Length: 428
Image 1 (spheres, helix red, strand yellow):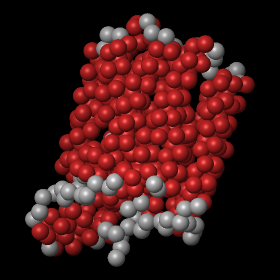
Image 2 (tube, rainbow, N blue to C red):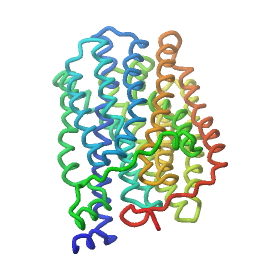
Image 3 (cartoon, one colour):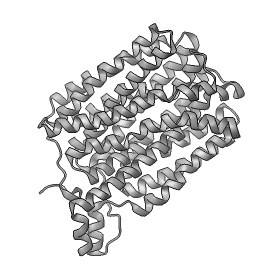
Image 4 (cartoon, rainbow, N blue to C red):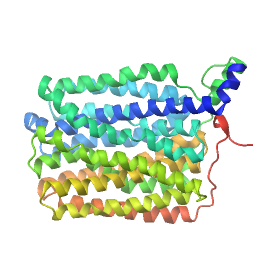
C-alpha cells in the first residue's frame, strides 16, 4: 500500500510522466528515421533499380494505402491490448521489416516491404497520444504531445546525414539494417518501464493481471461524432503536405536543385530543424492559452490558424531560384506544419475520454493517410509530366481549407473538454 501511495504523489507521477515522454520521443525519432531511409536513398536507388518518378509514387503509396487502413485499426488495437503491449509489438514488427528492406532488388520488392512496414509504423501516434492521455491532465497534454512529437522532426532531421553516411561508407543495404536495429534496442526499456498508472495501482492492491480487458467502442459512435470528423478533416487536408515533405523533398532537391546524395545530406535536414522548433512552440503556445483561461478547443484552433498562414507561404517556392531562399521558405512551412500537428493531435485528448482517444486518433490518421495517397499519386504524375510547381501551389492551399472545414464542424459542437483526474481516472 505504501508503494501505491508513493506513486500517487505528484512528484513521483511527474517523474514517471517524464520517463514516458522520453520513451515516446525516442521511439518517434526511430520511427521517422526508418521511414525516411528510403526517401533519402531514393535518388540513388532510382538509378540503380531504374524506376521513374511515377513508379516511385507507387512505392510510396504501397506504404500509404496500408498505413491508412492500419492507422484506423491500430487505434482500436491499442485501445484493446493496452498502450504497453500495442506499441511494443508494433515497434518490434516494423524494425524487422525495415531490416528486410536490405533484400530489395527492384520495384515490386520495395513495394512489398513498404506495405509491411506501414502495419507497424501506424501505431506510433495513436499509442503515443493514448499514453499522454493516460499520464497527463488537459493543461499538460499540449506540452507532452509537443515533446514526444519532436521526434517527427528530429527523425527526418537526423535521417539524411545518418543514412547517407552509412550508405556511402557501407552500402545502402546496411543503412536499412542498422536503422532497423534501433527499434529492437528501444523495445527493452519500453517493456521494462511502461505501465498505465491506474492499472498498476489496481494490480498492486488486488494482485490482478496487468492488462484489464476493455469493452470495444463501437465505430458508429466515432463516425457519428462531429468532433471526430473535425479532427479527421483537418488531417485529410494537412497530412498530405507533410507526406510530401517526408517522401519527396530529397528527390525534389535532386531533381529541381541538382543536389547529389552528399548535397541532400547537407541540406535536407534543415526544414526539420524548423519543424522541431514549431512543435515545441505549438505545445507551449496552446498550453499558455489554456492557462490564461482560454477554452482548450479555442486554444488549439488559434494555433491552427497561425499554422495555416505559415504553410500557405509554400507557394513562394515556385518564384525562387536561389537555394538559400528556397530552404528558408521550406523551413517556414515546416515550422507551420508541426505547429499545426501538435494541436490537432492533442484535440482528441481534449474532446474524448482516454478509452476512446487512440480510436479517434486512428480515424484521423486514416483520413490523413487517405489524403496522402491521393496527393502522392497526383504528385508522381504531375512531377513526371510537368514540374513541381503545381504541387507547391496545392500545398499552400490545403491547410487553410482544412482549417475552415474543421472550424465549421467544431463551432457547432457542444462537447465540453475532458478533464482527467489524477492517475488518469475520470472525475466523479
